[in-house]
Image 1 (cartoon, rainbow, N blue to C red):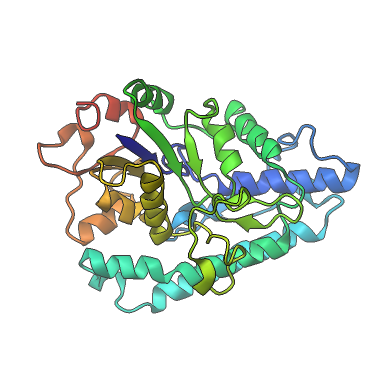
Image 2 (spheres, helix red, strand yellow):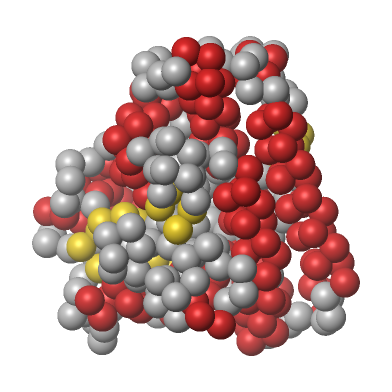
Length: 341
C-alpha cells in the first residue's frame, strides 16, 4: 500500500510559502551584509510584520501581499520590492484568468469541466515561476540550509505540523506501507526538514532549488532523474527538456502515477491526502482520498467537490463504499477505520 500526502495545508496547518520566502529574504540580507548567511538563518523575525491573505484556487491558497519586515531591507534594498512585485503579479494574473475563464465556477458542474479549468492555470503558474527565478530569491541556498530552515521553523512554532501527523506516518510505516509527500512547494529539502523523519522513511517529491543561481527545477532534475519528463512543449519551463516543474493538479496526478510506476505499484491501491484544488485530481483517482480542512464549510476544495457532485462526509461518519472523506487532523483519521481498518 502507498500513501501520498500533500505538504502545505495538509501536513502543516497552513501554507508555508510565505514563511519560506521570508526565510530566503533573511538569508539574502545576512549574506549580503555579512558575507555568510549560514548562521542563525531563521532569526530576526519582525513581530510587526503583517499580512493579508488573498485566496486563489490552487497551491497558493494562502499566498499573501506581505509588508516586508524592515530588517530585510538592510543591505539588499532591491530584493524585497522585487519579491513584492512577483507576489502581486501572480495574484493579479490568477484573478484575471479565473474571472475571465468560461465556463465560470457556478457553471462547472462536472469533474471534467473543473479539471480542464485547473489545468488551464499552468501557464499562469509557469510565468510566475519564471519571475521567481529572475528574482533570484533562493540563490546560494543549498539543500542542507533548506532542511535546517524547515526543522527550525517547526521547532520555534512558526510552522505547525497537523496534530497526529507523526503518529500517522509511524502507523503506516509499521504496516510496511510506503509514505510519500507530493508537493508543489519550491523546495523538497525544506519539506524534508520540516517533516522531521529520518532519511528513507518519507519519500519527498517536490521542486528543488539549484544552489548556484536559485532556479527552481522540477523534482529529480538536479540528480539527472526528472520525475516529469515531458517539458519540451511547455514554453518558459526553467527545466525544459529535463523535467517539468510541479505546479498544478495535472502535475501532481502525473507525479503520483510515475512514483507508483517506479515503485512497481501501478495497479495497487493507494491513499491520498490533500487540502486544495491542486490535489483534486489525485484525490479522485486514489482508492481512498482524505480532504484535510480546518473547517469543512470554509474549504474551497470541499466546496468544489460538492459542486461537481461528490459527497464528502467526515471521516468518522464514513460508510462502507465511501471513497472520499474529510478530516481536520490525522488524529481523526487514526481514530477512524477509513484508512487503518
